Image 1 (cartoon, rainbow, N blue to C red):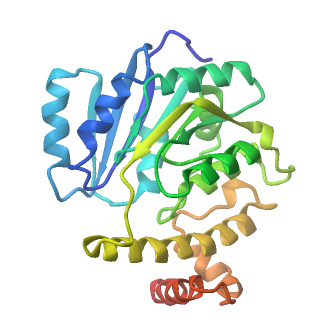
Image 2: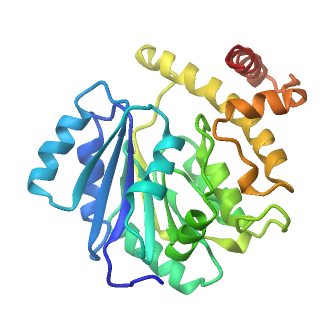
Image 3: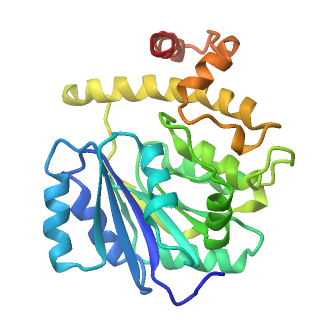
Length: 288
C-alpha cells in the first residue's frame, strides 16, 4: 500500500557527470514542494562526480550517493528499483544526471498521475535540443516516455519488484523498454495501451545539446549515432522476447539476445543511417 505522505524517491543516473550533476540536483529542489529523497546512482565514475555529490549531500540531507562499480544505466535502474529505493512511496521519479528539471516538474507529474488513474507512468517534455518541437509533438501524440525524466506510480513499482522484472544489463535507451513495460502493463499477452502512460505538459527537462558542427564534439556525436543504431536492433530483439514470453523472459544481459535472435541483425538502406547501422552490427557481432 502506498503512502501519500512519504518522501518521493528520485533516481539520478550519473556516469562521469561532474560537469552537470550539481545543476541537476539544484533543479530537483525547485521541482517539487513535496519531500523528496534523491539517490545519485554513480555508476563507474572516473571523474569528480562522487566527490561533488558527497560535498553536496553534507549540506543537503535529502541527497544520497550510491556508488556502483558497473558503468551501465540499466543495471543502475535495477539497483535502484530492487535494492535502494524505499518501499511504499506513492510515486518514484527517474532523471538523467546531465539534464535539469524545470521548476515544479515533479509536482506536475504527480498531479498528472492523480488525474489519469489508468496510467502506470508519466513523462516530462523536453524543453531544449534540436528538433524539440517535433519531439514534443510525437510524445503528446503517442503518450511517449522520455528516459531523461519520468515517473512511475508506486503500485506499478511494487508489481515490478514482486515479479522480479529487471532490465537486461547493456540495454541502450532504456526508455523504449520502460515504455513497453508501462503500455503492455508488465504482460506479454496483452495489447499495447497508450493510456497506460500520460505526459505532463507542465513538466519539462533541459539539457545542453551536442553539436555536430563543433570539432570537439564530433567523437561524442559519432558515438551517439552508433549507439542509436545499436538501440534499434536491441529494441527489435526485446520486443521479440517479450511478446508473448512476458518480461520475465528477458535475460540478465542484453548480449544473450544477440545470440537468441541473430536473424534480426540485417542491414537495410536507411540513407546516411545505414553507415551507423553497419557499424552497430559489427559491434554487436564482436560482443557475442
